[in-house]
Image (cartoon, rainbow, N blue to C red; front, side):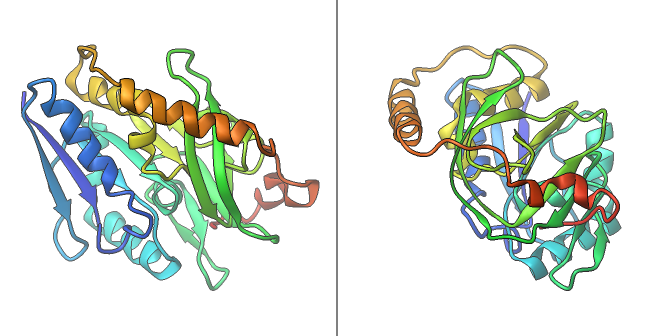
Length: 255
């Protein structure tokens, strides 16, 4: 089976190097002898068919432009309905929810892949390293860094990806969200370079089988170094009460 990995709108959602997630996926597939190709799908072109889509972070105007194009195009939603997987980071995470708040304060519709809405918090941006413990016990501690002003509220039936051990994440002590084959997260890094087991989970979903192990000793050493450094510093995971995302349930907006 040949895999197509699509980096969505790298010209709009490429602020934090999250396009590297696509490279990680392709490399880890090829290292196992799996045929995989990487497609950079610019915003001016129709979104191509793919097996796994990666969305990254972006500025406010770029986020809005990307969301509008994805809604008009409709390919991403149809692809997920047909079994494709999605990894959406930061602005991408907000885009695939039900709604987010633009820089003008207006609520804008998202793509609707996740029952989640994001509003801009009233305080300083969440900036720094994050550690999060996945709800799935088969996944190890997730490491990454965040840089966002959003508070994301998940619908009652949407589980988070993880519980925050250090950092902010969604703003309520949780990080990201996962539904079916769709994963949203605030973790940059790129997140799949820092967390190769998560990359393999995405690949296994679209391949429909477990993957042969790789020698990840070097990656593991770098992960442990990063995790130890964060654990030696301040631990957190929940915004002050004034920031609690329940305050934005009525507004259902963005970051």
